[in-house]
Length: 134
Image 1 (cartoon, one colour):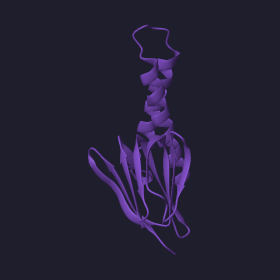
Image 2: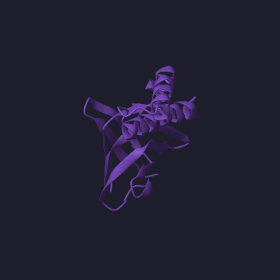
Image 3: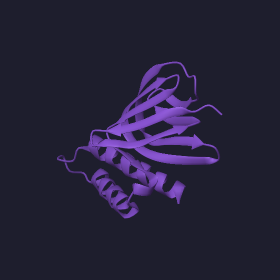
Image 4: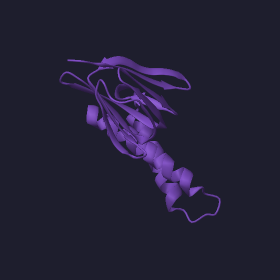
């Protein structure tokens, strides 16, 4: 079966590099499924999981925003942050989720609710990616 070369890169360096049969992720415009030979495109990503399918295996990488660049034989994801499922510390993610939830429940004027919402989405994404893999 044909494959795509996939690179997931953050400002801290590469997170994932491999050949896969299919990539699926959430762009701002909706769910994307990418197979070899896909038309070239660039799209902004949502906070979510990148699913990388190869044979009967599916690997998950949690990304928090960024961009995806698709070429017929290569996919590059430039993410603000990205973690492979095996690299996620579930306790740290749960603590981040609790902190964000408590910030959202406060009635103080000094709380940035948009920032707390994004922190909650990132934490929930990391927890979901970790739990789906283990």
